[in-house]
Image (cartoon, rainbow, N blue to C red; front, side, top):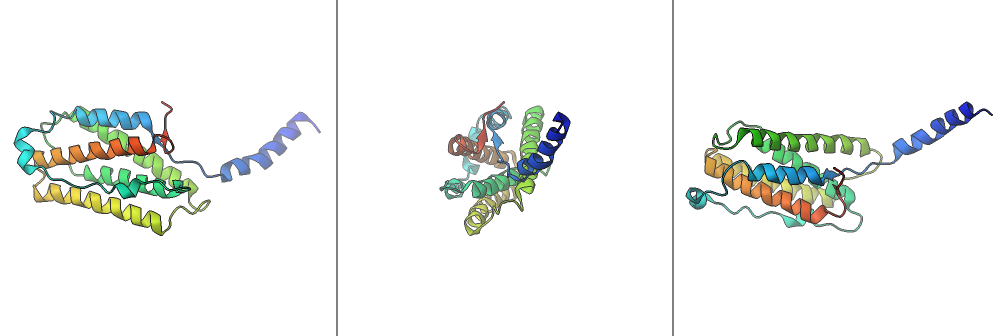
Length: 190
């Protein structure tokens, strides 16, 4: 058999094997770090005049706790987090005092990661069952958390202080992701 024939056989038999294995959906660690930097550079640190408007929104750390063999569950929770961060900024009622360039860059990075994660999860759907009751519970915790953030914005009429609370909370979320997933779900490649 000729070399060309052997190559075609390899392509014919090997390509379906490569395509059928689920890929790992990962955050890009560097993008999360850059997102944090953009959040920090939106404006001054939490303003003193906003202290009376500061609201504690307890983060559901249970949503991000990892269990053995729970990679698929965590992927769904991370996807929900990205989707929720993205939806918070759909309205254009952000403070005019924020650095618009930093805000645009932050939103673009979150949007990009959200869509990359969504594509990856769609590729994996059907090859590997990712959802179960545990991931549903975790996802529900994240949804509730972000609904509370949305409620703070609405109750405070999208004021600059309300957005500062959200910025503070988002910073904590990204730091938790960096801390919790630096050994598995984060891709450290630049």
